[in-house]
Picture 1: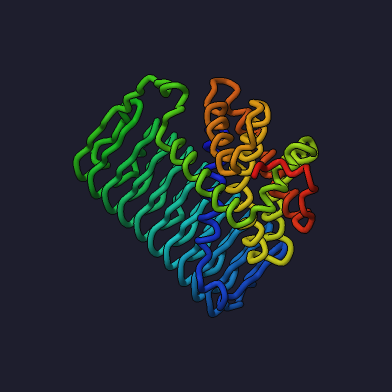
Picture 2 (picture 1 turned 90 degrees about the vertical axis):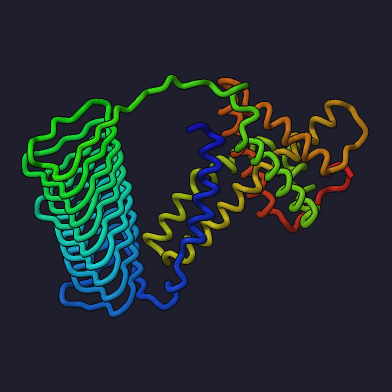
Length: 387
């Protein structure tokens, strides 16, 4: 993934993070700290929102559980769904609803009443685990040794099947392994680098194998200069920047002044914010006052990323006009010129990704500097935004 794609993903991810907070969070039970625990014998008669280095549900939760932490473990019972994001998610107890989990390792050793949906490096349904519904998983290694009541849809590096499956198996994997104890009630359709050894009697339906065709990677024309996504981003940045200039002309002038007068401090502050703010948001969510403040920080970070590129474009366009020794250019014209220059430069081979990263950090620094000094008006004669 190149730097511009990463930037777009961060922006989109921030927006999804803000929109994904359920409205029921206001009425739910909220627990956080280094260890968020529902103790054995305890019953939470509501939905549970939990954050912590370790989240443990050893008692009973009658609603849904939303958990974020380094480790999320269910040894008790969850009557509703389990939605978890953690380095390790383990279901040793019972989840009567669905399990939707993301992390490095997701393991089901207990009972899941409905379906399991997981995106993780390793997804494991052990021989002692049971999934009443379907399994949908993507990961490097996916193992299903316990019974799955319905079908399996999986994509990843290695898919291992070793237990009964009540429906169809649809897989896209580099390697498919089917053990002698596997019993697939439906069809087996899979795409793989090579055909798997399917023991006789393990598949009740038909087996269909399609080899994965590896196509030679074709370089985009002019390094993707005219790709649809990039052009949409260019137009969107121009619209967003024009709105920002119209609504906050003084802040726009301040951004150009900072870009000219304090380039190194601005870049350093932006580089710090680029990496420190996500870490701070995670620490706030896990160890301090909890999820609401972390979401506010994430939303502000997302907004800063969205405005960083138009701010950089305005600075670049203003400097291009100065370098060309033209008459003062209208501020919207400077914005458009700057964004076009950035679009061209960031699609240069080899250096384009580096320019994107450095420019993003510099633009974010402009945003941070602008917020820190928003009361200070631009000095007469030094505001670099042309009228």
